[in-house]
Length: 226
Image (cartoon, rainbow, N blue to C red; front, side):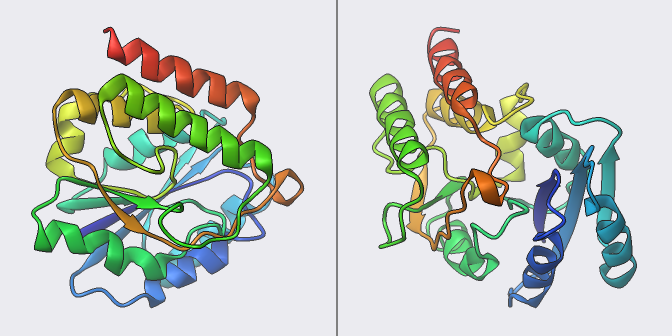
């Protein structure tokens, strides 16, 4: 069983297409989708109510916006699959890449796989996001002795048994930094596979800001010495 956690906040323009893609992708195993509406103020929740009747996925909702990390942790509380995929609610990441993300679990007995936007010739987003991601990757590699190419990627896939060991605390985008730090400290290899990436900008709904990068960097530093 593959569990897909889909946090969503104000994604009325893309949420239906993302969910349709998740159910249309071919998998050699059962899947469960767990969607968390993180206090959306637009029509996201209404669209999800309609889609839930069609697909019968697990639908959870926060009354107020708590952040991506908090939504992921809420979703994880309902996971029953052995492998857990984190899926963003925009269209930057394509579920057709699931087959590449899942392959190392079956071929190499991986515990965690990151989808790297750098390992494929993708269009680069705004310089701020591109170089911010580069800096986060450099910092993670330096602090933890890693050799990964894309630390803040939105496609992170885990064995459920590994996630249960991490005792996650993050509420926002620093989720990426927390899991990377804690996995590295356990000495567990992070596998990377190339993925497709379709960047969007602030005007298209991208929510990460400079403060999120600062919090993410601080999170990497904090867990290095904790």
